Image (cartoon, rainbow, N blue to C red):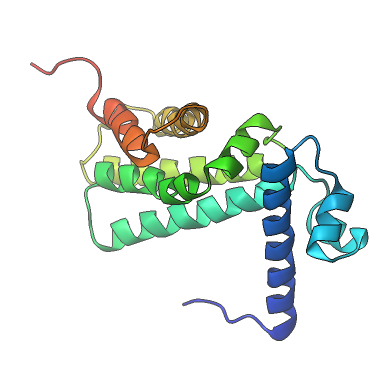
Length: 197
């Protein structure tokens, strides 16, 4: 059941989202390196203290993006589990769930790839993604949908690595569908490269 936010929490959420939006707009317009915290605070009409309440550095703004993507992927995984879809399908849907956002906001994704996006909470979101994938893989192994011979953590690392590598590759290419590229790459992992006899 969703949690209802009180007035203060709503205002804090709105402020954090406004800072994020303004920062992303400036990153796209001026480039990440050419955007300062002062530029962001001026665009968001806040003081520097308010900025630092929500983000310790400008790099940390990308952590908010990671949180948004993790929420989207977690919802996709939960919906798949609730509707009893096969685990390979849940894994694919989970990892492609953020594709629409990235495609609609390609310049932001490109800036994220160009910057040091390992800072500011992004590593925490990577860990959360790995934990989600490990759980899904264990569930698949328990119900027979995935091989028990595979180490779940290793499989999760490969899937997460593929997810990030495909997004990075897509961000520097033109006229490609991220959703299709992710689905195809995940299929390579799920189906394997070796023909079955």
